[in-house]
Image (cartoon, rainbow, N blue to C red; front, side):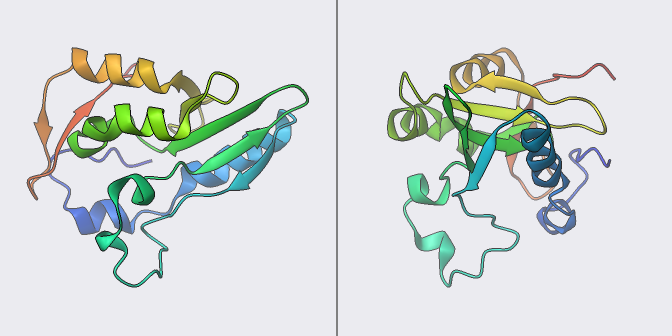
Length: 149
C-alpha cells in the first residue's frame, strides 16, 4: 500500500487501483452485508463531462449496505486523507444522503487491517482537529491519522 503524501500528483493518486472497494466488498460478504454499488468511481467513470455535474451528485456515496435489520449508506476510502473539497461538502452530503435509519458512514481501509468505520459526523470532527496539508498539485487535504504509523 502506497501512502499518498504531498509529493504525489493527481495522476499518481488516481493511477492506483481501488483496492479499498475490493476489500470492502469482501468484508461485506464475510460479515453478512449485501451491498449495492451506487456512486461514481472517478477513476473508471466514462460519463462524459462528469465534472460538470452538481457536486452532490458527483459525490454520491459509493455503496448501500443491507443487513438483516439495518441499512447503511457508505463511502469507502483507501486512505485517511480527506480533501478540503469533500469536507466542505460533508454537511450537505449528510443532509442529502443520511437519515436516522440509514446513516452515512465512511469505511477506511489501510493495508490488511480491518476497516475503521466512522459516522460522517465523526469524520467531520476528526478533520477539524487536524492541520491542512497540500499535494504538489495544490489540492488541500487533512490526514485523519486513523492508524498508528
